[in-house]
Length: 275
Image (cartoon, rainbow, N blue to C red; front, top):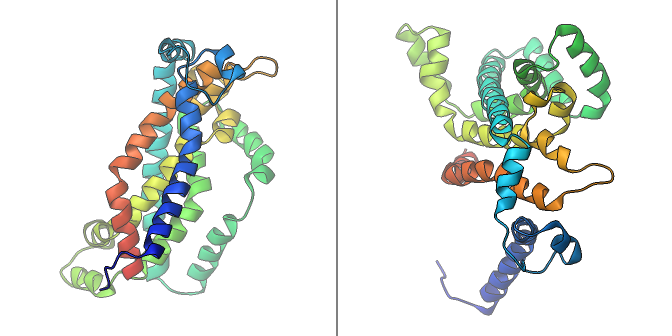
């Protein structure tokens, strides 16, 4: 391998560093302005704070009842993501292992559902959910996330399961293992790389989603973090100091979650590329 450090390598490193700094610019504005007063933000949003105001975090914590909003977001995200993993992995396995016209049609319907914009089904969804008693209900919102997220999740599992050797399942079947045991004892552990990817994608989507919780959870005590944050931005009154402080608190858990799983993301991408 040629490990010689060339001018081209130096140029690529400079470009990479410049792009990295460019992507960090929004984080700079959020962090710097989260410890400013509202007047200081409006006067010069790019400058360093004249006075560091940490009490912004305490004010937004009490004003928005942040522990309650955090718990609501956590429940919706954890149960929504876990349900999508269970439902989609089992469905994808059955579709791959039972080839035929019916499986092809069902898989085609799942893929077709991915291209339907949410805005086109928004009003019928709210009306149907109200008639089924799913509005103002955390379990109801989780159930709806199953419907919206299963297409993409199943599509990812479907492609990965094709690379899993069928001989492993056949040997387990000969030893007397039933289909349920074959999946959970033999197949599901082999799906770890794609499961980590699926968990990360769905966690980021559900945690940061605003529109669906806004439509489905109309009572104040059921608000998730993005919905609670919207209370700070009315038509004639925008509290940027509290809003940006809340944004830091609200995104901190998901950033920590992403950093903890970063190693598994790289492993998952590497495993997928080899397969």
